[in-house]
Length: 289
Length: 149
Image (tube, rainbow over all chains, first blue to last red; front, side, top):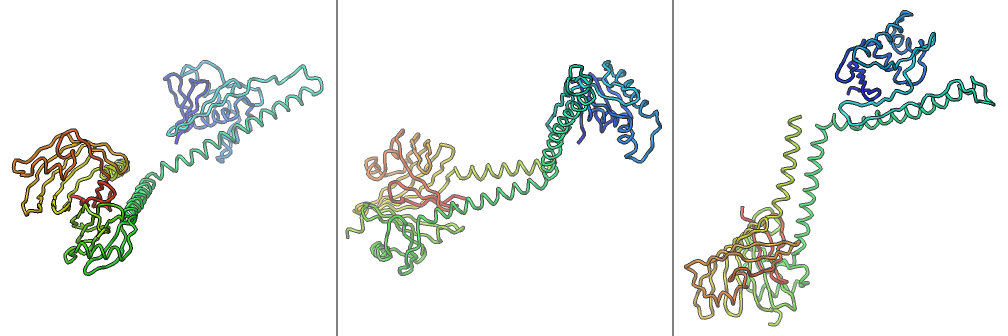
């Protein structure tokens, strides 16, 4: 994933590609210039000392820079900005101390390949030298202000890092493990349907339950007809059911109804084999006889 | 990536098919009706899908006096479904020219749905396992209809 940092809405900096662009004009900057700009952006509105530059851009990679290296980098950055038509001087020089990115710079960070942006509007410029202070000296006031701004930035950076690292971590995992995710979805769906069908079949199986055996017949009765084994056997006797070729009989006879029905099947109804049933329907109440 | 997309589409298609098949009923039943001292043996083939259906009915009535009459007709209908209940409305009835059963005899055995168009019939149809449906006209299951493969 490559990052895109948009400064003041139109100036686009892509640290991984080491490019800056402005309104369609793009130019490459060197690796050290790119890292210098990154450091300035991370500390927008704050002084970045020469030592910080040396540490971040060179020393952490084990190289010792020349004393002019930092000035060359900043100069490169400024020239590149002019080259792409960005006239505003956002990099301020603090003589003999370091550099800072203008506190008015707006920063929007995007991660290409994901869909989130985070806007950082730096604090409005604050007076470093406050002449109205009565109880606190100028130096102390300045330190207090700086401390407050530091805390504010720290909180913001924490939130920003949390969003970028944690949220995108999960998003990336999803993308990276898509190949794993699809079979999991497939398996889950299959399992769901398997149990769904089994449950459906289970519900159907409850329509008839095994009752008794009579001659060659295996007799089932409808659950809600509340037929005793004797009732079922008597009905089979009265109906003179021939079970030689179709042994499975499913009988429904309500005591107060004028109908009786049964199915004679070659195979049980709840098996995977076709049952091959013949249905019989009587307009008659066999309990009367 | 393409394979993953194809897998996903196949999965959706599988889900669609499995849901779609649940709705359609295509089955055949052999049933004998006994009323007083007569018997009507019927072979019923029917198909219900997407609120349209047809029903093929052929059979023989064995009368008390040992005479036989034949029944053979095709009915197309529309239907609405509410859970297990189907509200059928007859749209077209074709009687076979060889049918010998009189209209009055048909009316003795069959509801108006089978003899006149735009007549209604309420059925309860309950799936039984994966290969059969139980058809109810009242409290009792009238017949068991097995899937036509």
